Image 1 (cartoon, rainbow, N blue to C red):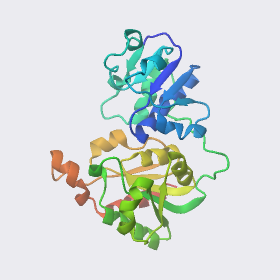
Image 2: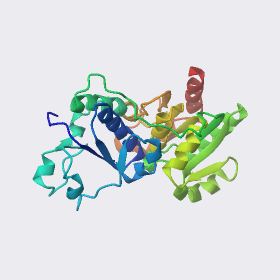
Image 3: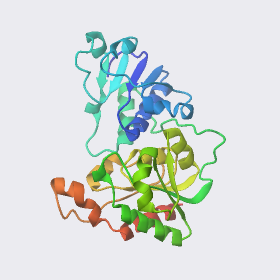
Length: 293
């Protein structure tokens, strides 16, 4: 972390949640007066939401050396790619070594920014700037339910999401299910026209829909981080309290629900936690979230 400050490259991770957290690095670098570029194809879809930042397509380890040659700092949470040029490896910062145990990732990104960029008061903000034609929480009763994630083991039970939606509807809320276009086919027969189902071809479309919604409910996924980043109140469903402390969305109003008892351990808990989290417990979590406002 004692390298000379010059052009900075941030290499994006695989998940949307990771990428939004990485934007905290970019925002702090910008505030430190540095020229910074993020290499992440997914965030290219949200480039208009981050007009102050330079965003380029994801680099591959093979052939990526040339694109990184002009940067004096290269940030990635892992070690340099195998076989990378020595000059580039010397400018590489594996900031994953700076993560603090049990710290929230968004807070960690601000902390790491302070360490790397010598900032006394690093910001937790990502710097996102929604388009001016959108109205924040325009549809305050609309509750976006995102029942999927990148890993099946992270997902609460589909039928319990539906029961939750029914209960919210009786209370005057307008539950809608949201997901990627690729996931829609599997979920159409599950929802069976009982609730609106919206799928999005790109992250920017999803962001626009979320930004004008009242609330978000979902598993540990990128969707929750996106809603949180947009200052939409989030109910985040997790299987383990310890993991939730680290990976809960880090912006705005967030309520986390987990099973009360760790009745099973290890790999079994990873797959069966969802059976020990009732609809009533999640509903109470949503009530706590709505009562905050």
